[in-house]
Length: 411
Image 1 (cartoon, one colour):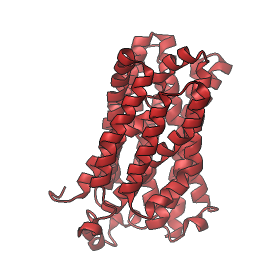
Image 2: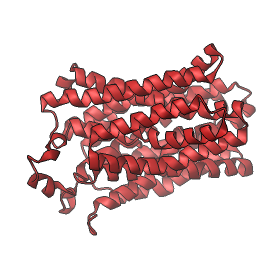
Image 3: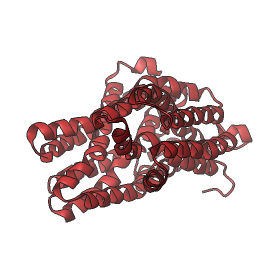
Image 4: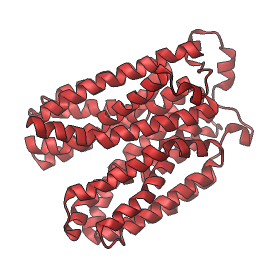
């Protein structure tokens, strides 16, 4: 790390922003479910529609929003996205019925897609050549940190002040902290303040060395790449990543509750949330040292091991091992997307390609928990769901490795 390199301030600001905005629509959204369902007299499945709307907006708008960020003024656009997010989130607390929730979820979805990893990936890609994996994983660790903090904080606030006031308080935290931090700290690229990307001079000096394979990106624009096999594999792989991640996140808690009890399920959630912070940092370091292919193989192996151990989770020590592996492996959902995209595309094409990849990831996230629950219901056991997710974990690695290797013919 260079002492006065401004890029690390960008990373720190990203950690803060993702820690606050990141969990709101995914990791902690269901904390509000029980009190909202009770007050409105609705079914949990009706509340879950909000999540489908939010992710649906992400699927549709990710390419457009990512391209919008590439045009510059990321600080202003991120602050605006946070403001939209917060105002719609606050309005949840004023909603008279679930149908207003559904309407507001379209605005929350827009805020979510404007404050997720897409702009952070663009920033890290602009500021880092060397240590890109570390920078990306540090930024993404904010998601895990925020999940741990806000799961406890929101539970306490709901108990003390009710769910309506808690929505308002969370929205206020977004506006008071995230908006000024991102607006005043973020700079689009090093050249804006007279610096260069970390490692760019070293990369130029090392052209033609053994690391050359991952220094070059394809010579195709995204529009030309859309029909190429490597791009199709990239998007299918992203869908698989979303399914593998959200399948576990959504169904591990009820599965462990059925096998053991609610307290042990909460402990398992805490374990994989905490280990997930380390997992993101470790994955970024592996990528920097050994390259994108090693990172994909490592993550794939961990996800497959996770779901094998899940089939043995009736024995609680195996459930703990499962949680550790899941915490390490599911970093692929946040860290690897930007990294594999930057290994294949550069410049404007990176932002457009990552938008498509994020749409694929959101599609998988929307399907993951539902798929796992449906398979478990049909088979009468969660073990069947875990074997399906184990197979999809393998497919995830095959598609992303295939995408990267096939892309090499276009450099």
